[in-house]
Amino acid sequence: MIPDSALLDPASEVFYDLETQLSADDVGGWQNSHLMRVALAVTWCARHGVRRWDESSVKELIEYLTSFARIVSFNGDNFDSRVLSFYGDVRILRSKSFDVLVDLTVRLGHRVSLDALASATLGRKKTADGLAAIRWWKAGRLEELAAYCENDVGVLRDIVAYGRHSGHVRYLDRSGVTRSVSVEW
Image (cartoon, rainbow, N blue to C red):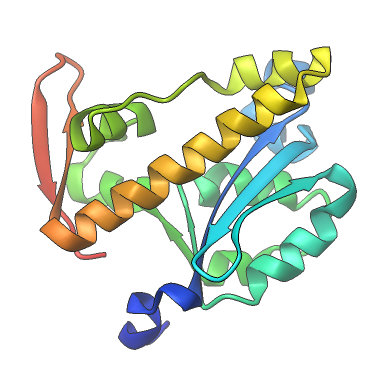
């Protein structure tokens, strides 16, 4: 268990997201997400700001992530860490993980998209989706891929900051109605 003081110290946590080279269809389904391969990962922490990691630096990324007390992601437990498992042991990442999607799913009883959170909580939308990211990767449009991944990390960071400050976040339900959920992040 991570002590509360570490959870609240911005220097003790890192936010991350990754995009893949291959889709679920390319690898025979979501159960094979560990085969999707990292196209690009982005991290953000108060100490280092934004950092980009390509496939050749994934082992260093895993080491970097493990140096923090708390690793914040959106669907990192069920997707990102599984993709990273292709490159090395990720058990320590999971032990330090705070997955916003997992937390909200427990609170709400259903999943909510990052875009639904960003729209209702921050008044902004995601710039693309994972399939567009794969197309950019395959076309060599790496700056667009990086901008998209950096945006997602920034959205996640800002949603967490909003939740910490206000004690709740908002999301759009499936009908497009804005709802609120209390959080203790």
